Image 1: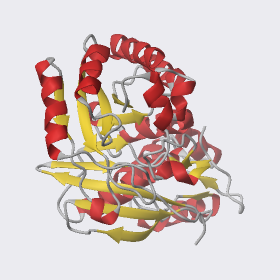
Image 2: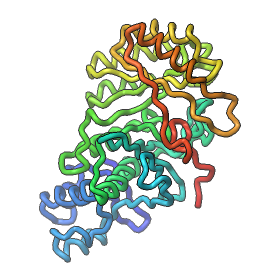
Image 3: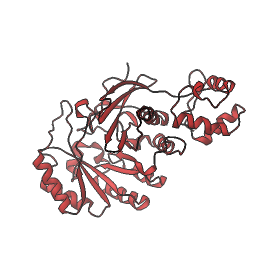
Image 4: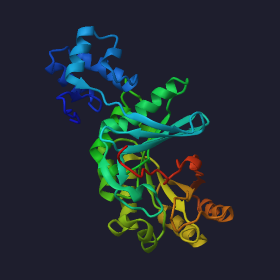
Length: 353
């Protein structure tokens, strides 16, 4: 149970499953059907005050306000409002900050959300890794990013269509909270995001991939590969020293066998490091037996990093090798780089305000 007892003794309701809410309302002597009403208010309509729950009696709302609370993340800053890419800076109760990114493309409205404050994995091309790990997010904090942005979109006559856990942090290192948040996103009287419209991104945490396959959730899996030899990958992704490419790909094969969904490999292109024709050929050989697609991502600059984005001709040549090898591959040009909202650019200098 993900309930959190606040310093004032109240129970945090956001993050609870409906059956857990039933248990809670039972302790107050209330009918169990009230749990579904409360869940709908919290997860679908995004309310944070019991007074807004107008189908509950005034006395019941008072009782709830005395014994429970509803997490309400603070939107500290919103950059790019109204545009194709919007970055949200959220303030947490302890003063920490996280970022989420909304991407509009055609009819798709995709929200990229965070699972940790910072990240412990120190991928050398990623700004978030420079923060180190400050702490895991609770399921409520993961979910509330979606709830807040969705409520804003609904006010504009839009709605979210897709969710990607590709923001700050490694989702598989905060496994229980992430799984709880995903299941709550999928509630039919909550946000109701289809499970196949949710994608989880990992840098290659092998035990987590295997554990995820046992969960049976048909979420999309995106794996940040970024190199074609262990020597190369270990230089930019320290996790490769623990779980090399062969072990990672075996875990991906096991995931696909169990879940039966095509896997995405993310490949950040770094000029002069992993963008050669030989790299492309090795990549074809590594993944040709896996049902997958490749997202090539030209590196998004971060301060004081010793990398460059490849030329357009190098990107095109790399892509041509993949397609000639009968792989499904696309180039993903990150939007929002002008507001540091591109892939690998999320960063917060301080954890206090």
